[in-house]
Length: 114
Length: 115
Image 1 (cartoon, rainbow over the protein chains, first blue to last red):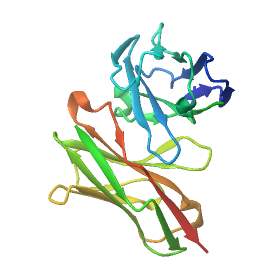
Image 2 (image 1 turned 30 degrees about the horizontal axis):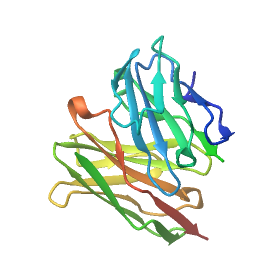
Image 3 (image 1 turned 90 degrees about the vertical axis):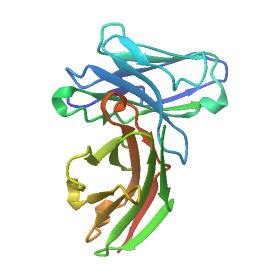
Image 4 (image 1 turned 135 degrees about the vertical axis):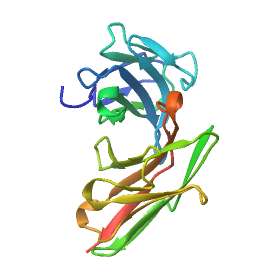
């Protein structure tokens, strides 16, 4: 597609529920990233995929967070047993050597845990 | 490890006045530096980036930034502010080479433009 697409754009869930956030990167981009932006803060790195594998997941805050990219394109960020502190905007981004490795961001998924 | 400090969480300028948004970084390796802009309810858009070529970098919408290694700074400027520049601006740093994928962002500076 023309840009990084994220769904849903907004999600309200109850504490303790399971949530999935989807990211469709720019076509042909091999690298995919997830960042989290809390209110009043800059984005924080969560995980980086190169192809299908997670090359660096050091930013995932705990084992309730997990992300997959089974076919090297679309990625899903999964959050188990959500907590109110998980409320944030989850940003997906992608890049490619062909575009100078510039990281392009989607509009984000706003997650609110009540 | 890298970090970014943006001085001033909120900056107000008059339309037509100089815009100066400050960013200082620390990095244990030669850095790549970036400025992103975020308009309300939109994603981050890259304004400009420094990747060890020219120290004065020109970006979109008339913005530019100068990399000053001695001052560990990468301040963003624009000679004349427009109303459409009102947004939040984020400075970010990454390592070069193999570490270039992980951006560390500052907390952002919200720019208001007064008519």
